[in-house]
Image 1 (tube, rainbow, N blue to C red):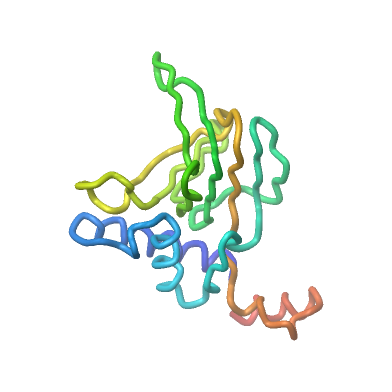
Image 2: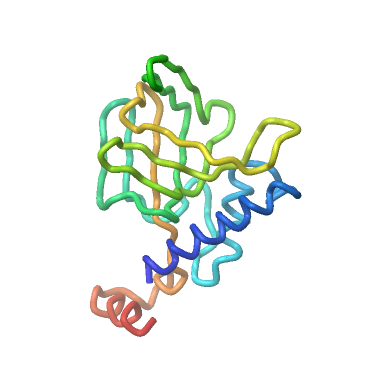
Length: 174
């Protein structure tokens, strides 16, 4: 079920990215875009910011604090006051993300060898399409926090599902 939800989240984000060339998606904010994506995925639970699901990866500065599983398409990336500094080709670059507003986006691709994540996120630049595709190299994070969460499946939020075997049965039935 988790895989199915992630795939659906990625597909909906791609569709909304294409639509954004002609119209506004969500309310134009980072969180508004992700909320618009998750609202169109039938099995995804509604987000409750600042949590966007099960935390699978957390990094503060250069230190990876939590890595439960691989980052997958359809996961939700959040960045708070993140400062990235590194090289693109022969040029050095500096980038600050999530300083004024929590940056939230949908992961579309992850290159494990390069620690590079590509996301769809709301575009904050006036006069351009409202959703953009951006990549971030996680090993270039110098300060701030980047977290990646797996979208929750609504079936697993019921309080009746308390044991692993009950959760497993629900997943198998789907």
